[in-house]
Structures are given as C-alpha cells and as structure tokens.
Amino acid sequence: MKLGREFLSFALVGVVGFAVDLGVLYLFAPVFGWYGARVVSFVAASTATWLLNRRFTFAERSRQGSLLREYLGYVLGMLGGATVNYAVYVLVLHTVDNDSWAPALGVALGSCSGLAVNFLAARYLVFGARKPR
Image 1 (cartoon, one colour):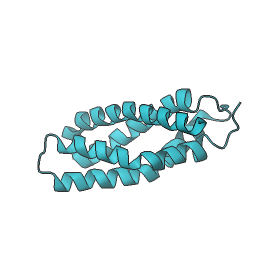
Image 2: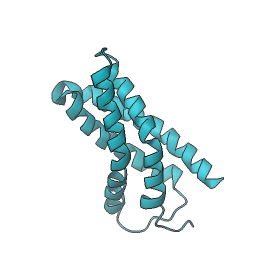
Image 3: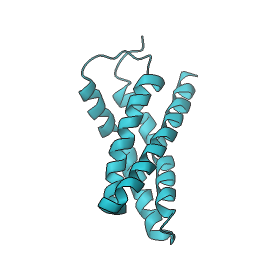
C-alpha cells in the first residue's frame, strides 16, 4: 500500500505545484508571453514540488549526498512529464478560443497528463536510488 500512499501524496503535492505553476504563468505572461512564461512557471512549480515531495512524499528515504544534485536530478526527471505537459498545454492554446481561461485549462490538462510519468520518475529515478530507512 506504500505505492498508493506515495502516489496520493505526490498528487496532492501536485495540486500545490499546479497553483504555483498557474500563478507564475499569469504573473510572467505579460513579460515573456504564454509560451515563455510557461517555461518559467515549470521551473517554479518543479522547485516547489521537489521541496514538498522530499519533505512529505518521499520523506522516509534517507537523504544522502548533495541537495543540488538531488534538485537537478528531480528537475531533469520531471522533463519527461513536462514534455507531455507542455505539448498538451500548446494544443489547448491552439484549439480553445478563449484567451482568458485557455492557459489555465492547458496547465490543468497538461498537469494531469504528465502526472504518471512524473511520479514514476520521482519514485524510481530521483528518490528510489536510496534505500528506505
């Protein structure tokens, strides 16, 4: 049942990441446009979810080594899900004709579509290399 608990925790952390992602997207869109701001929002959301996942979702796994290495590994590990996420986001922007809520819908659908890929990468590649305590 540990896998189920971790997935639920990862998904709940993802909700926080979604809020960060959306907030940063709308904050930076006037400066970088919807596409450039999405890159900035991904970095912000990845940073927030890394901190929360290492504290809550995968807290029982020992922390050894460099935090910077773990953070960079996490961000790199999230690139698979981010690719799926961004593709869905772009697809929504190109198909939905409402400029005010299309970006939010794109972030939401993209986040859901990348969830499984990101969970597997975090569990097995980033945090899975260490043995649980």
